[in-house]
Image 1 (spheres, rainbow over the protein chains, first blue to last red):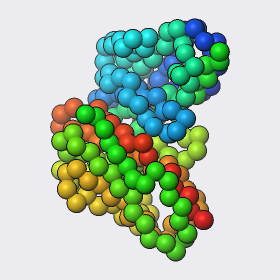
Image 2: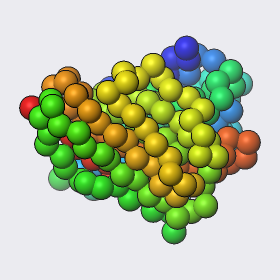
Image 3: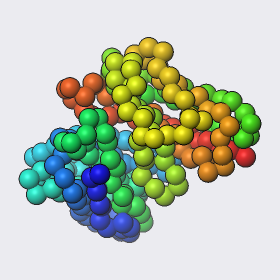
Image 4: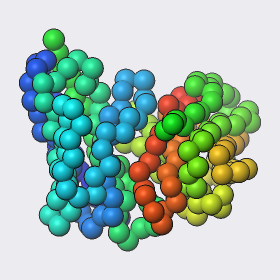
Length: 110
Length: 114
């Protein structure tokens, strides 16, 4: 099946710093989402971004489907950004089969 | 409204118990999903329902039995579970696969099997 790798696996930031999270996938995908999982386990939708670039406040995302990667940018980080960030892909060869990436655990310290 | 609700929030059960997890959405979505997430791991797909029919079973043991009584409800019936089944169980929904895919997740049920 498709492999979805995220980097870095762990990241510690000072409040106010910027960061880039990466999601690489091994096969063609129809769709890609970014999620933030808070400490209570809730998965919060950040972006639905099969291709192109989107921005929402301090967050933005870019997916280059032809090169099989997506990037999530976090600017001016806040302590509330802490948690685990997942990308999830629906790959072209699988009907509705969603594969999550390995995750990036982010800790923002004051 | 993009809310998916799950009950209960927490569940502790013995290996001989029978229990059910419930999930509900009112977004008119026709695809619903169950995922299992172990600690420090990503969610893993268990089941997919499309138009109230089971379309994907990811080789899940028969002690987990899904049910989709109508397009808004999804249940997961649990019987004779093992301690290694302790995990966070997440429900999600999306428009059917023919169109938009964006998935929306519930808050999860944290299950402990003793």
